[in-house]
Amino acid sequence: MSSNKKVVKMPSGNKGKAKEGDVHTVNLNVMHGTMGPDVLDVRSLYKDHNVFTYDPGFLSTAACQSSITFIDGDKGELLYRGYPIDQLAEECTFLEVAYLLLFGELPTYDQLDEFEKTVSEHTMVHEQVATFYHGFRPDAHPMSILCGVTGALASFYHDSLDIHDPRHREITAYRLIAKMPTLVAMAYKYSKGQPFMYPDDNLSYTGNFLRMMFAVPTCDYVVNPVVERALDVIFTLHADHEQNASTSTVRLAGSSGANPFACIAAGVATLWGPLHGGANEAVLKMLDEIGSVDNIPAYLEKVKDKLSDVKLMGFGHRVYKNFDPRAQILREECHKVLNELNVSDPMLDIAMKLEEIALKDPYFVDRKLYPNVDFYSGIILRAIGIPTSMFTCIFALARTTGWIAQWNEMIGEPDQRIGRPRQLYTGPTLRKVTALPKRK
Image (cartoon, rainbow, N blue to C red; front, side):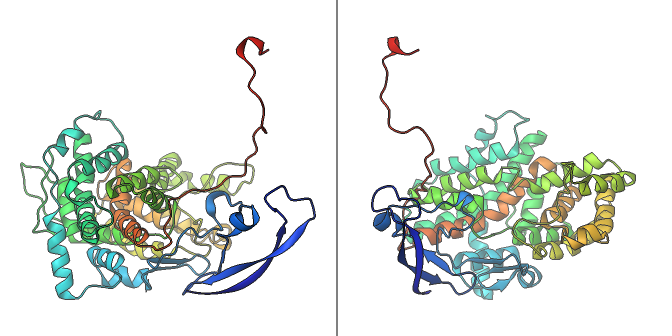
């Protein structure tokens, strides 16, 4: 990172109110990353000039430096540590990608073997964790359960909660990545009234998760390699996505010195929001609302109607203005899964027909409203038998790797400060309290 100066005209604060039209110039450092837009360093504005910046949602504010993930929405580009997402999805397993996010480089054979063994050693959870699940109603939302149980892990691992100890942070990373599939599967089993399944270290990370989800003690379960591959790709595509709402929440919680389990639980809670992790769930709700293939044309006409509030869920993306690079990868996996399983599901028929029509319709093509990753991931998860209520849990499972990598990076930042966003105050000015008997 390098920097130079930029002259900016701004109101004259002088530790008081600026007069209208009264401006002066200030010198601000311009910071240059290895990729992406330049950044104005505004840290001195309040101290030297008594002004804040105003940026709702922090859409134009860089709150940190990071070397983990880069997104160029205009180009439809997503890089993990400099590697294009399509190459990683094609050439690597999820655990290879997890290693990359955590340690900065792709592993060698020996490094991957050691990493996989270490993860497998931490997949089990304490037996008392099971009692936590039984404290929830059977119809509780799985994300509610996952949020609570993730935070509760801090009660079991006092031996590795020193956030300033690199070894403690590494052990915690292994524990979170290894145990999250177990916790998610247990949430599913609890909702079904089925016994929890212990991890099987002879299976892959993703194969083990599928077994914990769908196996029962009374018969053998064989992992379908096509399904295993598709779910592994889903994990890779969702592993990190720069400074989104949940990742920023993990960093903000971590800036206070909170333990990593609490920070990841905060990320889970944020991901639960329908505007963030619930997008693929919204796709299935839309398909259910459409009802049948015959209703698609009429539904699309409502989408096109400017006076209508009907939206096409799973198409377009807030960040990617051209296309979602993850969607192109997952589209292929989606069709492989549907062909492999040959499932008979009217909702999946609607999804495939909707995709076909929207990709040819000039209205959507001209507006670059292509199917995004949520569209295809929702279809895949439904096809393999995962209920809609579990979709965001799957997202959290995958994103845990990115969260812990971002948290670990934040702890090591020399400029790290406890998060303290400012505000533009618009309430009453100073006034006196009137005693109760005198108030009218």
